[in-house]
Length: 360
Image 1 (cartoon, rainbow, N blue to C red):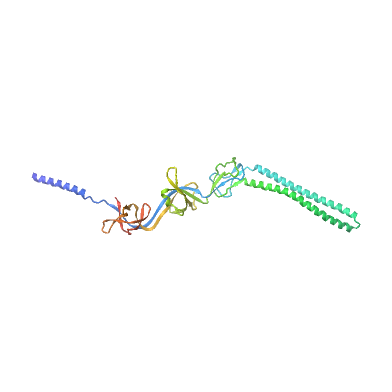
Image 2 (image 1 turned 45 degrees about the horizontal axis):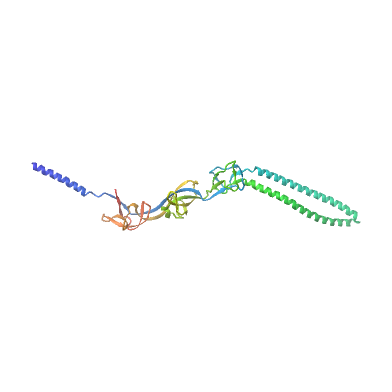
């Protein structure tokens, strides 16, 4: 009986040991995900971020120096071309203008009085000459003829003198009028207007302050054409090309118009600046804007997960589940990739199954 118990114990021990060896040696393979090769679109994108700037800006300045009497706009306000921005103190010029106008008016009155006196003197002289001719000549007809001849000569002399005299008088009046026009223009120019539509920055312009002639005292950034300036890392430099469309979501908002040369920065990095012309939109100057640039794209092409593509000395390859259900290594040619999916140029067909290199 003891012999049978020993045999049973030995058999159970052997069975446990064999089971353990089998479990270690014949562990079932771990599962891996599969993907069905299909048609789709692939877009390789680059995310960029920058500040909105004005494509056009103009300084505001006065052609004359003076004290600022009044500022009509606020800093950061949107102004229209021709809108008054500020006014210089023109009180002194206005007083001078009134004085000149008074002088010109008085001068014209004096001219008119002189002409009236000349006409009166001429009439009196004519009467005296007529009387003397009547006494000198024997007949009335002879006296009249001689009087008329002398009168023509005197008229010619008088007219010539009048023309010369009037010429001198008109020159004086002309100078007065020129001074009046210049002062009126200066008074008008004392109100400075916006040269373009846009957002104004007043800088140091304040009421009561003094400005220098032709020195910028404010700047207007035009809002009719806006740009986005973005930094481009050296690794992405070749991906950015003038003419490329720029997106926010799925909407085209502009295109790349310029790319500067690469330059070294103080922090040791190398980068460039790209300028993007923005389409019409509600953007605030100096605000930040995140955009997307499509560097490459392929539509309706065979695609597979990008990370399932492996590489060795023979090239790019994937693991394919063949018709026999076995795993097969197959080399492929790849195209556009966006990090999630990769275009397959050749080596695979639609509906083939590929096996993930990663275990679940």
